[in-house]
Image (tube, rainbow, N blue to C red; front, side, top):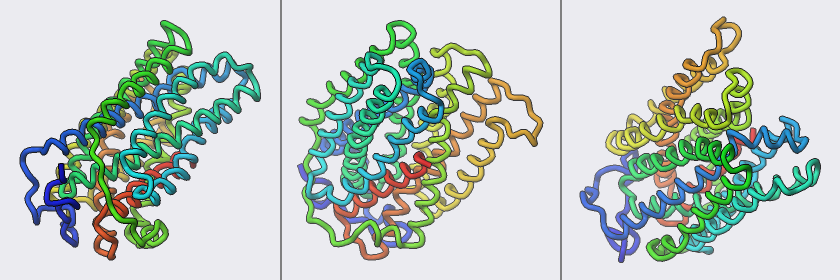
Length: 390
């Protein structure tokens, strides 16, 4: 089935409304669009569950293997570094590789290496354990980059006039994955040990592959002439890339530190630590569709979302500790409240970035096809990974 509006889909208009309403978006989803949503939702849910499962218990398990907190942070951080490198490559060569193949292959490798992570407790402690953790996380990062880069591009191709709305709505599944991952991982770890959480989630991801092979459409396009460097050299895109960097560095800071802080400060068991992450992930998932809809209907609001979202995020991190100069006692309820506000500000800041980059690219002569969508989705993933690495 062809995308709405012909083989290349409807072409977004230029200017600030490049993802807007010069052509009315059909009220009813086509069969192809519905299948694209299912595929994207499955990768968002599965990948975020696999990514977030480490938070509640891996730092503690790594300590048993003689791994310092610094090295544990590097194990978390190497994921982002290789996600960065892979996103640039996959975004550039998306058309040559094929979006559907990249999506399915990424899911397959991600599910397999998630299962492999579950047997690392059998590896001798010390350098061997550390090396294997790095190798498995690197492979997971590359596979994740492939699937997400392809997913963003396919979504933008299928929904050219409502990119922010669709991406924001699908962040419900990303948030759901972040919500379910930590408590589910903590529960399975407490009940069955280290191996079961990874094997369980890895099998879920692998079981999604046959469905996606069947329902995901193929999109063909000619390779583009533009590059990442021309895209990032645009001043507006460079500024948005800096915003993405800043936001992702904030979230990357939380991954290896928040669970240890909660364990030591409030003496919570691993299963309850996962519930602390619930405030951040759930508020992000709930608020993202709203900001996506507003970004598509009123494109002039995007810049204000970016500005105020970042200001609120900065305030949240000042109160998260809180910083000593405020002389506020750290309390669990305050921590959860700040995480909820942080999730809302994250949705406000993150969702408008991709449609703004696309709009800027089209205004500056980038062709309207899968090659540009690959560059933009790869750029977003790469810039996000830079921040997490930092």
